[in-house]
Amino acid sequence: MSMEITLSREDIVRLCERVEGAQTRAYAIPKLTDEYPGMTIGDGYAVQLELRRRFLARGHKQVGWKAGLTSKAKMKQMGVDVPSIGFLTDRMARPENAAISTADLVHPRVECEVAFVMKDELKGPGCTAGAVLAATDYVLPAVEIIDSRFSGFKFDLPSVVADNGSSARFVGGGRARYARDLDLRTLGVVLEKNGEIVAMGASAAVLGHPAEAIAMLVNILAELGESLPAGSFVMSGGITEAIAVKPGDSVIARFQELGSVSMRFVE
Image (cartoon, rainbow, N blue to C red; front, side, top):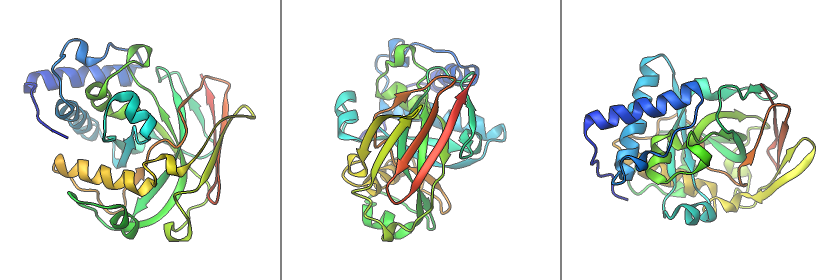
């Protein structure tokens, strides 16, 4: 994947301000490639890293990263052969059983993921799933609330990368387990909304094994001149399709071996 940057510094800052405005004030914007059709994935990451710089300067703390578009179906839909990544901060985290406000989100959707907590730093290129498992402290079940800031949830890869991979909120819960005690390929998960099953899947949907998604994330970080620090919380990508939520909805994700994660949505 080429990380070539074609945009000027002024354009990167301008697009960053556009994305930041949409995220912080919860309104939809047209995809960025409407105005910059030549925008590359590298340009998208340049905007994302500028957004991170601004958030950190304002006192947000980075807690980790997430991989997105990690299922073969999602990649095919987006016409890509690698996942995208986004950063996670402390202000995106919500506790288990939280009431999560949708007033500051554009069009939220939920998906079930396996989250990894790292005990050792990982560096690419050439990171493998085996290296990821060796560096993992434990895994836990999580729900990511994604929120593309683009009108009609329509976007392309450079735009979604610039929008920090649609990151919005995340909830970790259930039981933390050592990865070596589980078969992370075959974990079943059921997503319930208002007591009805709305999505089901198995963790193999994530590139055959969620640790493969983390390895790809580490290798993308290497292309950006970054590593994955020890202590990072890393989300490995949606096992199920993303399900839309609105105020009044309650959601429970039930993971085999890992327990459940629940939350409800309010105005």
